[in-house]
Amino acid sequence: MALPSDVPTVPIRPKGGFLTALRNWFFAGLVVAAPIGITLWIVWSFVVFVDRAVTPLLPAAWDPEIWLGFPLPGLGIIIVVVGLTLLGAIVANLFGRTMVRVGELILARVPLVRSIYSVIKQVVETLASNDSSSFKEAVLVEYPGKGLWVLGFVTSRNPDPEIAKGLPDLVGVLVPSSPNPAMGQLVFVTPERIRPLEMSVEKAAKLVISFGIRSADQIDAGNAGK
Figure 1 (tube, one colour):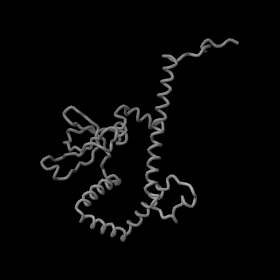
Figure 2: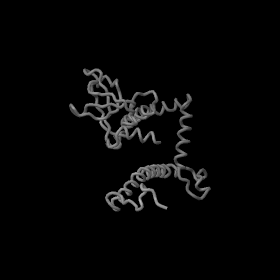
Figure 3: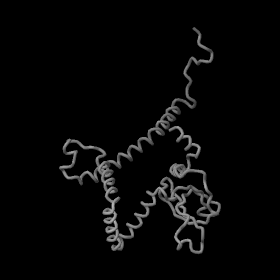
Figure 4: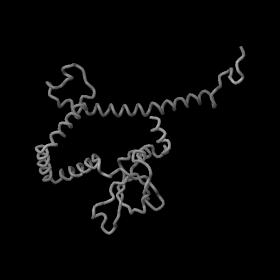
């Protein structure tokens, strides 16, 4: 039986030869495996770190690993989640809030500790607050000079009076560093040096993480495929 004319009778060699195909396959596999492997490694390292820090604090009578005779990965994470939930339940009532205020008054009397505690508390409360406008707007900011535009995240449209004195309407913007958008330079600029973007903070952060290699369309396409 004769084969149709449009069906090749011999295998078509990849353009560039077999070695080129092997190289392309290798990098294709790397693109798939690297993000998965690195993500799993980071998660596993975090779990191991918490387990090693928390599990030894358990009394022997309460340690399920001793009863079972083998380690339980993630036990430290479970203990931390349960502990934080119980702590939240305690501080939600009048007695708990009173104890927190007493503890803060004690810390406020220690010169170095009170400064560290105050800064950390403000940062955590800002990030945990659902009503805060911080980090919810991605913009282009003209920085560090005229004609140079970088991605930024608005942190405050009402900076402290000490900062805005003589310069009303200043806007606080965090200019992130690649590939870690949580780090960067805090700048205060006038509104005319800011260009609003129709882009979510998440998408802007992904652009920073990828060093701008991935376009916004590629990020949208990747999210749509999930």
